[in-house]
Length: 508
Image (cartoon, rainbow, N blue to C red; front, side, top):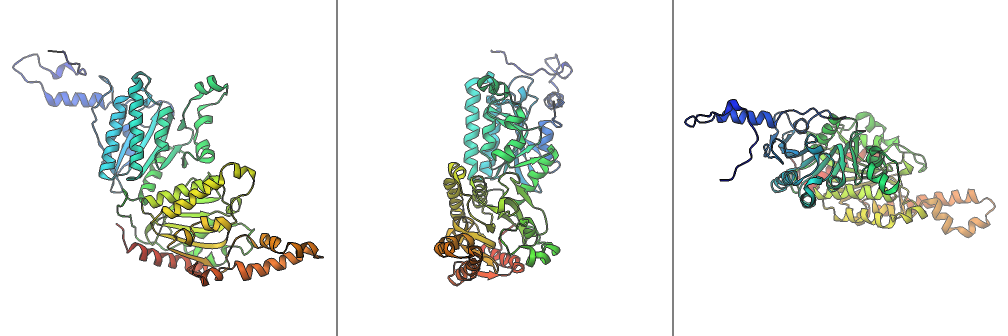
């Protein structure tokens, strides 16, 4: 009979008398003590993998899956996975254990992760990945790579079924970096989490570039420049809080009940300021957040990608207690213009909302797409087209309001009626046109302006006529392209009424 390798247990728990049965309770207690012994986290880490999972979910709700699974005798699988609840709603958690081979993904660890993924997909529960891994485990060779591929395949399968959120609480290197890129939202802890395909040593050897892990894959790089990650926080505690807040806006799965809260009125001071908030002159900036304060419920809100492509705002909020996705131009940043990065950011957000049936509220003040050789070289045509597709594909309620200006192709791209907006309005002093009045009259009256004694005066006069006779929203309203022309203070009530009609009062 072959000899079986078993983890060692204390001698006191096993009797040598063949007529006396071993104390199985004591054996189990000893195994649990050995398996769950706390290993002090290294570096900037504060909590163990299990502590992280428990902190994320409601107190006492975490249940670990296959807690005794091991990659080798006396060691864990390299991951703590299980389920729990956040605010009473079920969620699956996968937490890399950096105490086991630096969290490197081996064959056994990959199997454990895939089991959790399959459970989440089949049951329709969101999944949160707490990433802290050095990449594929070298000693496992092809088996590690095969396991990583299986994780990625289930990441992709999950996209059409459940929300996926990644937290980067340590290094996330090599193959381990692909899984977060396949999830919906990624949150990074500042100066603690990094994501990169190749680390500093390999970069130095291959290119001669002397760069730190933070330079190659830190949170500032990915939340501000690359757009690979979507939120930077200062601590692990903040990462868990942001994740719980994000989950509070989302259904547990595609087709699941939308989460409803008790309605909260908009901020009364912001409501009072709405009629005069937006400057009449389109070149004068204002903060779109102040406008949103006067329309949305005065409660929890979460902005994603705040530092990346800031000319567009993407955030989750509530109106009439209903969770909604909000997309808005931000005049305070480059006039609210659309460029390649802003288009990709906006398209990703709208697509996500549509995938999980979240209503999309669009607030428009856009001068157009950014012109020039740089943007054309970045493929702004293709990226702008992604935003068009996202709106068309999204079948959840789409409500759009033009609050000041909306010109050219950017008018179409920002949730217009032609892309399927279910309800759309324009404020009385807004402008909708192929281009701004100044540019329009420069083309339409080129000869007259060239021959005028005072071309600037004539241009301003012609622009004023164009603005009132062509650009004002009444022409669009009379044609039925815009549903109605409204006052700023009417916006919230119009959106609530439309949302109630479009959702039939659905929610949980």
